[in-house]
Length: 441
Image 1 (cartoon, one colour):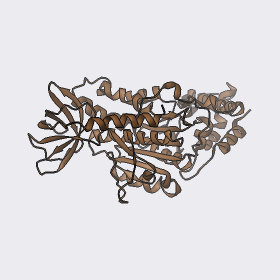
Image 2 (cartoon, helix red, strand yellow):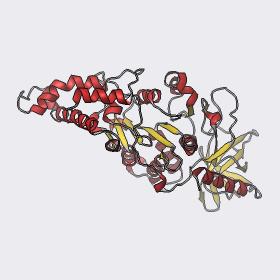
Image 3 (cartoon, one colour):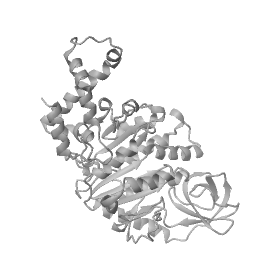
Image 4 (cartoon, helix red, strand yellow):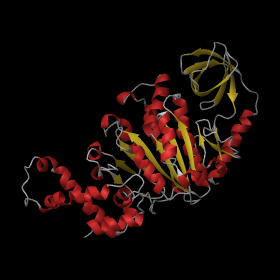
């Protein structure tokens, strides 16, 4: 059974269940985000419609139970709820409207258009939480994915179906690097999830990083930071579900989630509201468990030939690369690109820390000459970084170690190789040739 067939089967089961007599509940408690209802026996993940005091409809989602009461998380924190309000099932809770009509559009967490271009005529549905597949249906990553960034193409070569984390502190250049990758990537469809960012950055991202021809093949799901945590979480799941739909049709999809940390923060708010115990840095177990569930949905499909190459930005709070979210993301992805504040302060953009960045699939993609040249540059980078303090204070004597001597001489060449303008695109073959010429044996 194909993935698309399984998705339709799951949605048909949901629709059959919704045809049964509806259970209408009553609101008995509301504390800002969390609501409690009686007489509303719906499963976790189901949608709900709460009739507010002024007659409007506010959306919510079932997130748990407490005795015979159903716990719901509000999707609209500003609604005028009243005790005893009517709570109805929401038929659109567990699915996502998908289809080619989404291309070129900007939607919110509930699939409503934000771009003022009218309704979106989608004819198909896909489960919001995805379809659990067989691990053996995942294809190996053996084909290079041209990112358009020389440092990544040559030193951290990405593959079709790879999952990559872009790790950095605030203001180091995650979004700029993401924009470069979108402009330079060879993909049939680009799905972007802007989760928990400033509202201004959404407009800026569309104007500067999704302008031109790439806009026509892009789909943006945007939920700013001032929205309810459940909306931020649903936005990431919606973006991933849309990418899964196009992968099931054999297309090459580039999925970008900015940022995975904001998604984890949303789950932390939900988990703490439900009474989960806080663990490392206040994160409950559900927040750390969310990351592998979301990331594992990306990858290449051996049966359809489609793929989701995913890029997740991860905010290292306080530039701490050992932050729990950074650790959890780094453990599940197929590679990570770490951006360094000290390198950005030297005027080098993208500020990639070559020694601490890694592509776990590069060895299966590149040829021996490419691999040797990359190792040669990494060797010089490591030699300089390990002896940086000695070199800068003048305590190192030239001639002591030939590798360190070469690293000092070639340091400007390495930094120039890493530099690339935001609007500049350098393809895979061009990047490979430049690396071999400059650092090959």
